[in-house]
Image 1 (cartoon, rainbow, N blue to C red):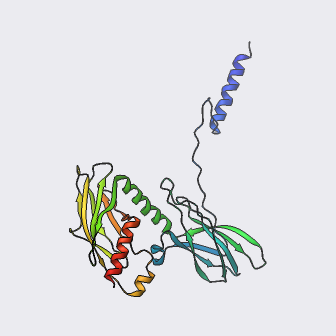
Image 2 (cartoon, rainbow, N blue to C red):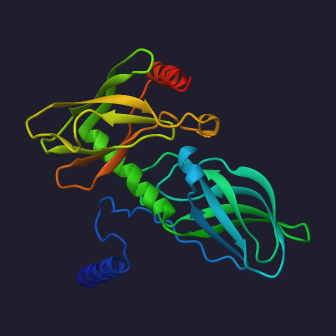
Image 3 (cartoon, one colour):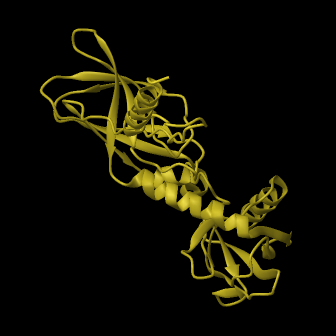
Length: 284
């Protein structure tokens, strides 16, 4: 019986040590911190940067990994893939691109769907590299630049906007050289003022607002209709043949005191067919 105080004291001392070392001193489920992705170390002789060219904008989710051979030996890249939090993984793209010292080459890649719950850092690219002796290395190379961070912020702003307001095109109709419809905003949540400040054209078509911008959906209002007509802005064969997104029309919208966001006018297959028929008629 005389040992009991000593045993109790020893148990209390062990419990205190466990608590100091981060172990739980009492029963229950310990808190678990979310894992963090560490930034990859620099790779000797190889530097990379994420860039978005003008042609990438019209190509949708494409961008470039700009790779530089900064060392003293050549190498060949046989695959390239983004490995960046904040975007869903996309399979690697095969290539057979040879680098020599000082050479800089852009390799196109696709980025996955945005994940707004995850920050986009640290940005990296996974490269499969073949050395002059035939050996192969799988490398994770840090990506310089803020391209991915800006894209993440823009796309997440658009996601947040569409949680507040629905944007669509209604009543698209016309004959011959005329085509008109309404850009319609319908409130989904909240009661902040919603402002449409800009409606941008594609390379070949322009939606022309029939009311002076900006237009506002005031607090307490549920629906805003902005009449538009469409004009063909370019009919030269080069523009008609080369444009990849003839029917993408960005809309700039601001909710309350927040930052503005840009979303594309959503068009269904029937509406795209109407726009194509109009463009063909207007450029005849």
